[in-house]
Image 1 (spheres, one colour):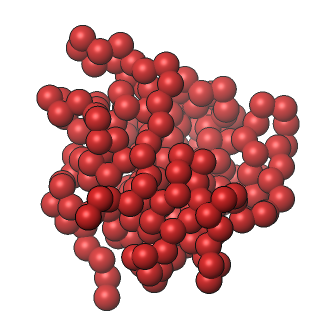
Image 2 (cartoon, rainbow, N blue to C red):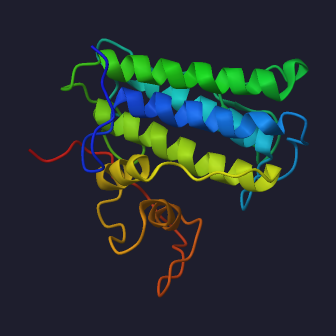
Image 3 (cartoon, rainbow, N blue to C red):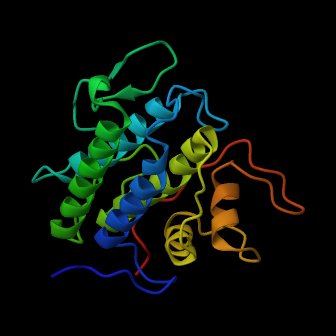
Length: 217
């Protein structure tokens, strides 16, 4: 049965992952003719590298939950490589010959993989992440926040508009950033929580992390 997006305070679902990725692809598709080697917002990576990194994140979250007994103390041991010093360390790379359209297809495919694994995983499943052992909902929320904020970075670089739905941001904040400001809209609060924006009276954080541990019962 399909998991449907719930209220802003509800759980983060596999459908939220697919929704975030599909919105991301739709937002970036008008920029296929742009220069994707420009810097992505405040990051040191290019727009191309950032989307590859995002696809790799989605793939790796699916991979962590994939084994019958998911690892609790380390990543699934894929061979991670960097194509250049300072670039992202990935398993997933897109074929440059296919251009940005191919890159977006890779992103969509990896998002679908994560959604499928989250949808079929036992709610009791747990797997390693550097920010702490997480459950399927936690990995879904990680996939959503990675998508929302990295598309923000890429949209800045490519000069396209990007403002994700408030309910999607709100569920992600509730799940991963319990100490996020509650007196501002969810999207600015999410950008602030990930060190990408200032808020009135709150300079942007110089370091941040999310909390992927399962919700307390």
